[in-house]
Image (cartoon, rainbow, N blue to C red; front, side, top):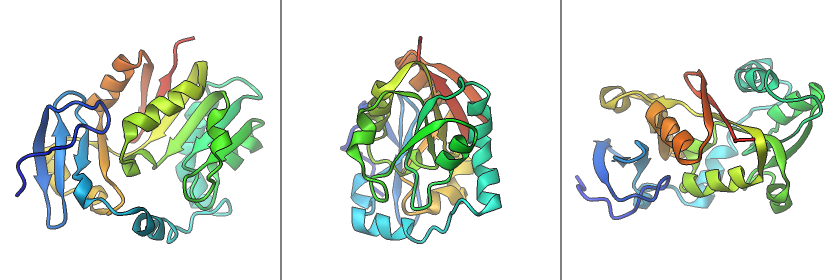
Length: 217
């Protein structure tokens, strides 16, 4: 077992890191500052292998079950945003659906995905709200991406993140969620409190895997 992590925390860039868990494929580390759990960089998939996994996903707007799943993000967001808001779905995947659901509710949407909707211009516009569902667990540099999204979020705007949360070490060891080879960063409730405090955001824990962060007006 490797007992030393030479890389800084990919969220807060700190070096106060301890070994958290290990399975037959990977080592997992925990930052003692922001509580993020993450996979050794040397054990992360390369971009081609990662994309190959994503291309196996078969989500589509016609899938009622998928829409119901995404409604756990759309409904709390729709309760908070103003009519005719302009939103970004970051990490929309090969079958953009959440953006269509917001459009059907009367909002204007842009989409971005590094593999399936790689439009850098979409990351240069100001938005009233931004959603990112089942994305942040895939990010090798979540701190960089978070700051990028907060820069284009308007004052008073909402950032919605959906990702399953770490509960404790025992639960993590038997957690199926960590077994997906594209899942490399894992957030706890404490991690989101750290994010809110660090970036001066208002945190709302909506569900076991849905959080909303509001930027100061």
